[in-house]
Image 1 (cartoon, rainbow, N blue to C red):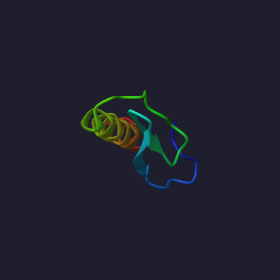
Image 2: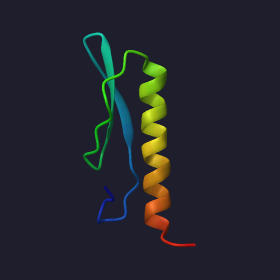
Image 3: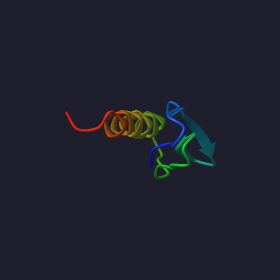
Image 4: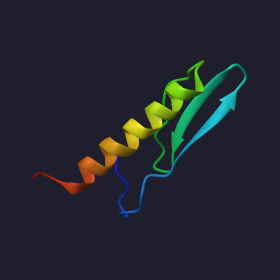
Length: 58
């Protein structure tokens, strides 16, 4: 999901009980994870794939 205004994807992680969820300013939400490190990995992967999508074809 790319933002139309060209802004960066700002990701955060949020604790929900025993789980951690990655979220992005574009509205994307990752799966609930027990490991915070995995939620951070999900966020980094989303931000990286979003940047690749916005740069267009090589």
